[in-house]
Image 1 (tube, rainbow over the protein chains, first blue to last red):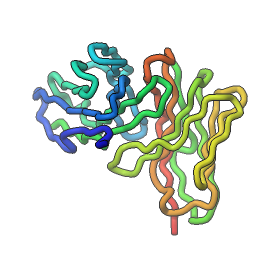
Image 2 (cartoon, rainbow over the protein chains, first blue to last red):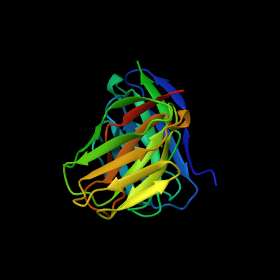
Image 3 (cartoon, rainbow over the protein chains, first blue to last red):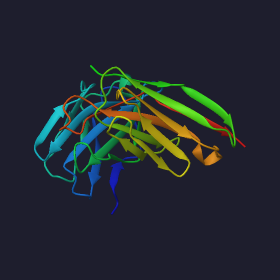
Image 4 (cartoon, each protein chain N blue to C red):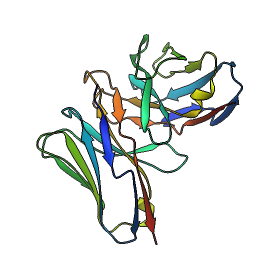
Amino acid sequence: NAGVTQTPKFQVLKTGQSMTLQCAQDMNHEYMSWYRQDPGMGLRLIHYSVGAGITDQGEVPNGYNVSRSTTEDFPLRLLSAAPSQTSVYFCASSYSPQGEQYFGPGTRLTVT
Amino acid sequence: SQELEQSPQSLIVQEGKNLTINCTSSKTLYGLYWYKQKYGEGLIFLMMLQKGGEEKSHEKITAKLDEKKQQSSLHITASQPSHAGIYLCGAAAGSSNTGKLIFGQGTTLQVKP
């Protein structure tokens, strides 16, 4: 199993550009989440999903969209990038709501 | 909303020394997770605690959840350079059926050889 994979690993965007961060897992996990990590602030939840077709907002959803058309994939879309979205983004998945969350390696995004 | 506070924020210890990291919640904890992160990498799951008074160990790392279920501690015995990294505690946020976690701000550990 590859576990949780994320692409790209690094990305530089200009203000106003849009892009999609990809996340995929091959463990047949229903629960998937997107977090952003900023210095001194730990991880903050952006959006999450409890299964294909079901998504909801987390703590910091503004400026981001998600969809979950399959169990495996959970892409995160930046609609119009802003410098405040410069961060490291992590995708995670788990088999059950109380179970261990498996994290991807992260995408380091810089918005200039 | 629930918040997790970790202390200390950073720690430098000499190899071989013991250390403790604390995680305090503003509300009752119904599941507490400890993760370790090396710089530039993803999070590695260490342990999960659910019951008040529960204690788990893995190699030289022991985690406890206090009886009142609002604080957890992570203790490392005889630290090694391989223990260096960022330690994060996480807890179930809101309903326990969503898989949502909130995290503390992290504790950065350096171990001097």
